[in-house]
Image 1 (cartoon, rainbow, N blue to C red):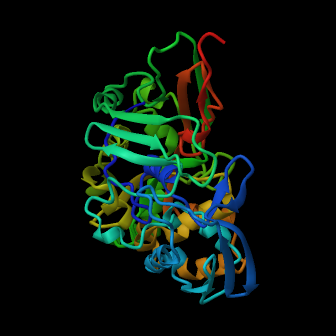
Image 2 (image 1 turned 135 degrees about the vertical axis):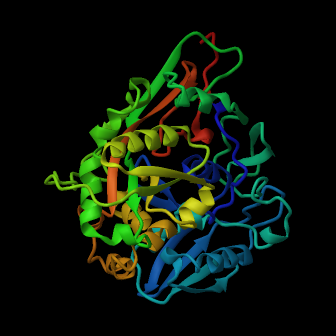
Amino acid sequence: MPYYRPMPNLMPGTPLRRSERHLVSQIFNGLTRLNEEKGEVEGDLAHRWEQHSEREWHFHLRPRVRWHDGRELSLDDIASTLERLRTQPLFSHLAGVRRLSPRCVAVLLSEPDPWLPRLLADPAALILPADRDARPGFASLPVGTGPYRVAINDAHRLSLQAFDDYFGHRALLDQVDIWMVPKLGDQLELDVQGACDLTVEINPRPALEQTEMSLEAGVYFLLCDNRSPAMRDDAVRQWLAQALTPLAIMQQTAPAARQFWVAAAGLLPRWHHSRPQTPSPAPNLPTLRLAYYEQHPEYRLIAEAIAQCLAPHGICVECRTCSYQDWECGEGEADLWLGTVNFSCDIDYAVPAWLLGTPLLRRSLEPALPLQAWLQGWRRGEEQASSLSSQVVRRHWMLPLFHNWLRLKGPGQVEDFRLNSMGWFDFKSVWLRPADI
């Protein structure tokens, strides 16, 4: 598969972009996992679990699970992973791990959380070796327990090889190679049609081709930063929502760039939380600082369109690029943050987890919005995904822009080739039908 950028960080629990979130699911395992086709939480490293009390859950582990280097998974690996997660808002209520037997652990909580089995299926909660910090280059050449191991990961190629000792069904594809082709990103900036498709190739490449498309459960958005004095003004945010409507921005972009965008009125295509705004005078805002992360070719096009929308009102847009890690952590000074998010199929978990757990949102929205209180209310069942999203959007802290059509192309002889919520496909389930059958 050709891809437009390298992926040097494949470390769960750190800031990961959409593609990396998919890839770590092929390399690592959690105690539980999400079955996207069924929308259910299933056993992974744990084959069974039960709630012992409001604040204690027991997880029964599979025997003889091995890391890619041959070492056997230990309870220390699980305990150290969960301990590391406690610094993150979603996992801050993890009080500890207690060994009950060689194949059973108790996870202790400081407050009840019926979402715990799903929380432990989050990409952030994939289990890592306890000695990961002592392994040089672990982020780019990680060792997991999943169906694929990382054989090569450099500026030119990411090569995954099937792990023969995987505790589940052995992957049907022996090897998956992702080749870094920077010109793909350049082509998108030049509005070359189809440059953003994820394309799968085999050699020799057959003439027949199959394409899957799906409107993403996600959105491109602008986030107003409460740390900016200008953004604390309700009138300023309301005017920006009026001036930077999805259609206004789309009209300033070339047809080839916007052909797969759908104007958004909420975080999901079926949600309509944005409301028409009554025209109001432009604020006295000579400069607007817009931040977005590097190596995303569409962002420059969107930023230019935003600048064109605001220029007639005397507002100059100052663009600031940063690393993805700095973007997700909200490091830096900006009035607006441009980004995108894709949600898994279980929206009741995925949307609140993102809104209430992402460091950028925590830093940008608190104390203007009571995110910590909402998080505790969500755990108690008092807050729901749609209502949380509505409150953020209708107060104009977040401006939804577009939903994107995800596209996946591949040769006709690839079977069980299904587009997932991250715009990729499950490597281990795909197989090649012989050309002469």
